[in-house]
Structure formats: C-alpha cells, structure tokens
Length: 164
Picture 1 (tube, helix red, strand yellow):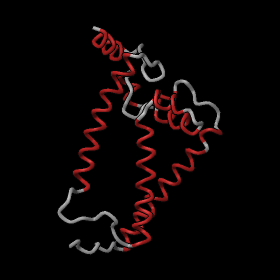
Picture 2 (cartoon, one colour):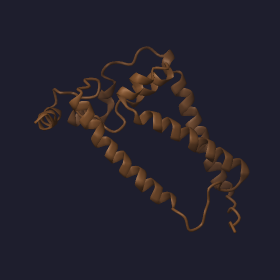
Picture 3 (cartoon, one colour):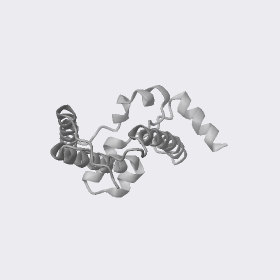
C-alpha cells in the first residue's frame, strides 16, 4: 500500500511557484533571442573558464544553441552544444512539476524510502562532468573555433595532446 503524499507548507508551495515562474520568465526571455541582433562571435569571452583556458565549459555554446533551436536549426544546436536541448527540456519538466505541486499542495513524486533528490543530483553532476570531458575533446578534435580559443597556450597544449 502506498503511503499518502505529504502536504507542503505554505512556504514550500510559494517556493515551487516562484521557481516555476522563474523558469517561465527565463524561457520568455529566451524566446526573444531570435529578435535580437546576431550574437557576437566572441560571446564566449564572458565565460571565465574559457577566458582562462581557451577551452569550453560544459555550457559553452548553450546560448547560441538555444538561439539555433528557436530558429528551428536543430543541426546547428546539436553542433554547438547538445546539452542545451536536454537542459531546456529538463527545465520545462521541472517547471511543470513544481507548478503542479504548488497548486495541489503536495509532492507529486514523494516516495518514502526511495532514491533521494540529493542522490539524483549527484548522478546528474557526474553525468555533466563526463559530458564536459567529451565536449572539450570534440571541440578541440573537430575543431570548433566558435568554442575553442587556440591562441591560448592551455587549449593549444590540449590540442597537441589529443592529436598525438
């Protein structure tokens, strides 16, 4: 027999509604990206990791990939950063889940004794780290000048190590 769902406090309901609204606002902002002028070629220069190493972070190319998705160019989005497609889908799923929980007043997927949310985020974190390694390898090997600054000595040494 399944235990009854645990009710959420007023604060928990408000937090879930705010999180869902925040994701909705971010998606609304992203929906105007196609209306903005073309993103500068050096938009990666705002990424601190890229600035220091010349290599892409796990999310480098994500803004341009999102823009490509909004233009219907799946090929370019996947070329720039396929993780952005998964992040957009997961964000929409979480926003919907949190909105349902805020309105209903209890956790939809609460199952005592089952895998905790912390464990799920640990596994997701490891998956992102694994993705990051592949993202760097692919960007350097292909090469993707939109994502890698080969003028940086660290990026150049990574390219030499991969090409051996």
